Each structure stands twice: as structure tokens, then as C-alpha cells.
Length: 109
Image (cartoon, rainbow, N blue to C red):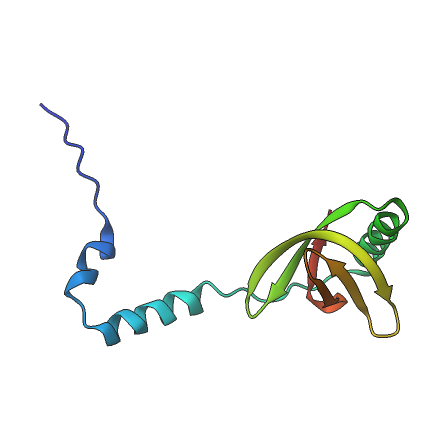
């Protein structure tokens, strides 16, 4: 009995036969089902991130920040310029200066 190297590609093999409108609908559908919800964060975790950001300012270290934007996550690596407690934002430099709201931060390393 010989083994074949056939690998079923699922729905991918049918895309050339679809109309452009169907392809656009499928892309929107897959983007929609992959969206995640913003998790609830406890105060202890926020305090740990705050101390990590303050340490990065003091020592000039780069930090990895994972953000929540429009139902998806995005990672940034950069240097913390400032923390604005009144506005609840962090200013991060990663080639350009970005102000990130505390509410959008998922993790800091």
C-alpha cells in the first residue's frame, strides 16, 4: 500500500471558483470570528505593569507591550518616554512616539 502526499486544503481549494463578492464576504466573516473580547484585568496585574514601566523609564530598557485594538492584539517593542497618570496613558517610542491608553494594554514585559 503506497502512501500519497495529498494534503486536503479544505475551503482554500475552492476560492478560485468564487465570485469576488463571495471572497470579500468570507474574508469579513473570518475576521469577525477571530475577534477577541477585552479581558478584565485585576488591580494587582495593573500594579505590576506600572512598576515594570517605571523601571523601564529609570533604567532606559526597552519593553514589549501587547495591545488590544479593534478585537485583535498587536505587539510593540519600544522605550517608555513618559507615563501620564491623569490621562491614564503611556508614551512609547518605537521609531515614532505613540500614546497608549492603559485600558488597551494586555501585557508588559
